[in-house]
Image (cartoon, rainbow, N blue to C red):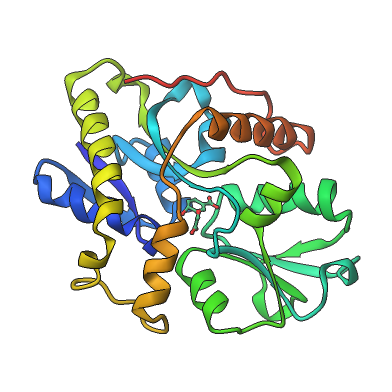
Length: 258
Ligand SMILES: C=C(O[C@@H]1C=C(C(=O)O)C=C[C@H]1O)C(=O)O
C-alpha cells in the first residue's frame, strides 16, 4: 500500500511508528499535494485535508478513529497579522497554497464569527495578514513573527464548541472491506494510543530548527488524533457551513468504514 504522508511535525509521531512496520510505501508532501495524489490514484491511502473528502465523497472511505484535529488551540493553523482582526475590513489576506481545509475554515470564521470582509491573494508580500499552516505556522507561532496571532483551532472551538478535524485518513473506496485496510486501521489505532505515551523518546530522532524540545513536546501534546462523535459533530458543522459559502457542492454522506 502506498500511503500519503504529510511532511509536518503535526503527524510525525504517527508516521514514526508506522514506518517501523515495514509494510508500506510512503509519499511525502503538503496536504494539497497529497489531496491531488489520492484524487489521481497516486496513493492508496492518505492523511488528507478533510475538505478533500467532501469534494469527492463517492471516491473515498474514511478510516475511523483517527484524524488530525484540535480541541481548542492548535498552534499550527493561524492567521498572522500586523493589525487586529477587527481592523482587517477590506484588507488583503494571503492564503497558503499548502492547505485545503484551513482556507475554508478561515473563510467561515471571517464570515460567521469575526464578521470581517477581506479579499484574498496568493502574493505573500502584498498582504496585510497571512494564513499559514503546518511547520511554517508553527515556526511563526513560537518565534513571534507577527503582532497578532489568531489560532483557528481556538476560534473554531469558541465559535462552535466542537473539535475541528483538519485532516482525515481516507482511502480510495476500492480498498473498503479488504484485509489490508482493516490491518492498517488496527495499526493506526494502536499507534495513536502508544505514541502519546512516549513522546519524549521521539525527540532523540527529531529536531525542528527554531523550536525548543519543550515546545515540540507541548505541540505534540495538544495535537489531537481522535475521531470521536464530538469530532464528527464538528466535521458536520464545518461541511454544512462550507456548503453555505459555496466551497462544496453538497453535504457529503459520511462513509466511515474499514
Ligand atoms: C493541524 C494542521 O492541519 C493541517 C491542515 C490541513 C489543511 O488545511 O488542509 C491538512 C492537514 C493538516 O496538516 C496543520 O497544518 O498543522
